[in-house]
Structures are given as C-alpha cells and as structure tokens.
Image (cartoon, rainbow, N blue to C red; front, side, top):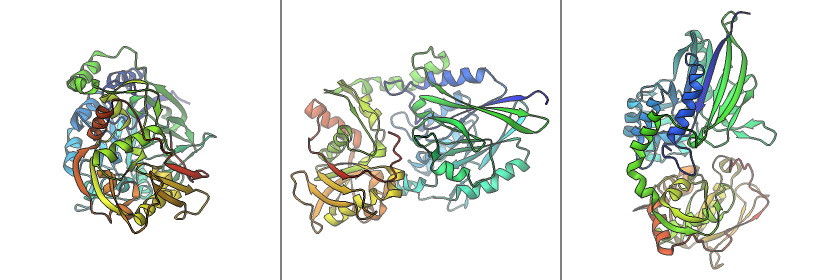
Length: 488
C-alpha cells in the first residue's frame, strides 16, 4: 500500500442566517473560526460544504448570508426547502451572488424543464489531487414546506432517480470520491440507528462515500452501510466531519472516520469574521435589545406536545388577529424563554418565521378535519403537531388515522358545532396549505391582515408586561401520537 491521501469533509446545514451571537446560537464569527481552524489542519485536502436553508432570513436578508458563506470559502452548497420561501427572483439573486457552486439535482423549473437557474446537479471538486464528485439533493417534501405561490414555478422530482443517474455520471467523469450533499431529514433512534428520507434513499442508490443530511435538528456523524453519514450545524452550533483516507493505487477510499465538533461560543474569533458579523448585525442591536416583558419561569417548546411556550405564541396570534381560534405549525418555533427580561431577540429566536397573519372563517366540521389531518401518522411524522389557541382538543391516538379526534370544545367547554362557522387565524405559510394541510386550508377564503407574527407577539408582551398564557389544558390525549419523530 502506498501513501494514503487524507481528505476532510466538513459539512453543515441549517445555519439559517444566524449571524448574530445570542444566548441561543454562537454567531457567525465563532462558527467560521471553528471551520477555518479545522480546514487549516489540512488546507489542501479539506472540503467545506453547506447542506442548505441559508438565504430566507429576517432582518438582514439573503445576500449578506451569501457573502458570509463566500468569506468562509464554501466549496459547494445544496438548496434547502427554505431557499424557495421568498420566490423565484429572490432565489436566483442569491444563487447568482454565490462564489461557490449551488447544487440541486431533483427540483426543476416547470417552464424551462431544467434545473433551477444558476444551479447544477453536481460539481467536480479537486482536493490534494483527488477528484471529488458532489451531488446536490433537496427533500422531496419541499412542495409541502413552502408557500404554494413561492414554489409554483418548480416541481420536486425523485431523488432516487437523480442519484441513479448522476452518481454513475460523476464516476464516469472521473470522480474518485462521491458525495451526496442533501437537505434530507433523518431520525436517530434510541439505539443509534437512523430512519427517514436520507436512509430510505441511501439504501437503494449506487454507493457513495459520504451522505450529508439536514432539515431537522439532531447532530450525527457515523458510518451507515459503509457510508459516512453526517448531519449538524444548526444555527452554527456544530460542524460534522468525515475524514477519508484515499489510496491512489486502489483508486478508492480505504478508511472513513467520523467526528462531530461543537462551536465554542466563547473562543477568540478571527478578526475578519468578527468584523463581518458586527458590520451586518450591529445596526439591529437596539431592536434586538429592547426588553418587552418579564418571564417568571423557563418555558421550553416541544414540537409534539403541548407547552406553555407554544400556547403563548398561539395566544399572541389569536389576540393580534382578533379571532376566536388561531393555529400555526409547531415546526415554525423552537427553543426556550428563560426567567427575567424578555427581549425582542428572545422572541425572534424562538419564533423564527415572521409571516403575515391571515384570517378566515372555518366550519366546525372543517376544524375537526384539520386536526385529523395533522395526526395522521405519516403527516405527523413529517411535521409534528400544531400550536393553537381558542379550543380544547380530545384525541385518542390508539384509533386509526382519520378517527382520532374525539371532540373539540371552545375554551369555556362549549362543544364546537360542525355546522357553525368560527373566525380563525394562521400564518401565511399555513394559509397556503403548509405542512401538507392544503385539504383544509385551500377551501377557506383567507384575508391578509397585514400584521406580522412578531409584531403580534411584541404587542401582546407590551400590553401585559409579563409572559403569561391562558391556563386551560388544550390537548387531552389517550396514548401518544404515532410516528413521533420530533427532535425536541
């Protein structure tokens, strides 16, 4: 055996534009310094990859995030579902601003019948004299995770078919190492085994040396069926790492090692990255620092169970819209509020999206259908539950899908009547059928209130001065929801 060549793959997902250091995330400077330091250990043989969900951020917008990735010398990126949130023009402008190749093999423009403008399905990189083929893939669930008008120009196609076409194509073009850079979720079981979209694809495609995932939290770095599988980096908190040892004589990877690095938020950051973070984020310091109210206890959100924080967010929407009932997808929120002053930064950190609130009228029967949809096992596995206000729901999870909701009442115990109409509010995303709820949402006549979710929360806090929530238990359950993949 001749001398082996070391190739280091650093891959992160879902940084989500979290450039500013907060109690919830380490900030761009700390994360970039970590990545730079690891690359410095093997400068000629390191690849830095981004698995998507970067551009569609509040406050500073997409181009400063792209510039941050340029400054970090990113080697390639794949599109995440949130890259499509703000429409075709925004996406194309961000892609055009990137100094690195942006990849997506399985989402195409309908009109052109071609790849998203400015992207390519795969790219050939060369590090330490070794050719590395990188294929970009985006979750096939994207159409259900983006507002319908924003995704209308595109269609999601089979990721498996893309892999079966392009992995051999990369090999034929000379790739000595192959890598799938995906925005695919996967779930980590108590036994360490994985399941979900990434695993389902991995088991039926030509072999790759590395498969990168993303989309949902949960750090992972390990070998699965001989492939190094990586997922992490959410808000810059971690950086997964695969070290490959390539044998030039065998023209193959002969050893794989997997690591997971955690960002030290207090480590000395490089001046170039600290200066960039400050330049982009400091104009918003006064906004983020405003104390809106006081919290008496810690509230933590869970995606698949009722929490005070989830109820509070829904209460803010209901009061802000002036309706009887409000709901939103639980996956729009996360994290915690600690005791003490509650700032705008705290709220923005736990409620990551700032859609306009939409209102409508909904019949009692359609409201029942909404909750039945949410708790169907496959849909719940992909989306978890709802945050809601104004109603109390009784569910039996031991019953078959479509028959789980035993009853719904208003807050005072009055049963929801199938034939009566109720005023309702939700986010723009959910009004357009987000999280695969179009069977209900598309049948309603929605009105944009012009009030955004953050503004409703801020107004609620300023009005009451304390974090408080109406005391009723909103979900009464028999058993546990089927297919609960919630990472927190």
